[in-house]
Length: 103
Image (cartoon, rainbow, N blue to C red; front, side, top):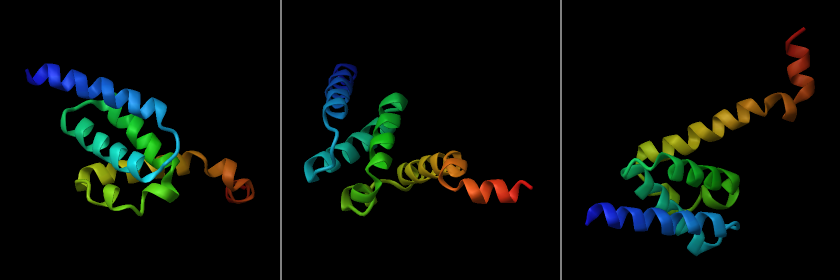
């Protein structure tokens, strides 16, 4: 029974992530819940999509109680993913700084 329930949760949450594109209160809460459940059950692809959505809407989502009450390991994943993205975008965001440091 647990496996069937997990499949239903996975499918319904996948649809929610695909359809929901802007962070409103309900979507933010649902996405944070989805991230917690996906992490708890080892649904890495789903958790990754949630983290991408959370970080894409960082300004609206990060200061919310829904995100800040998640377990520390889930928050660390969001922060680390955001840092990796910013480091990867560094040369595009600050081209003069990167070029002057490499000379």
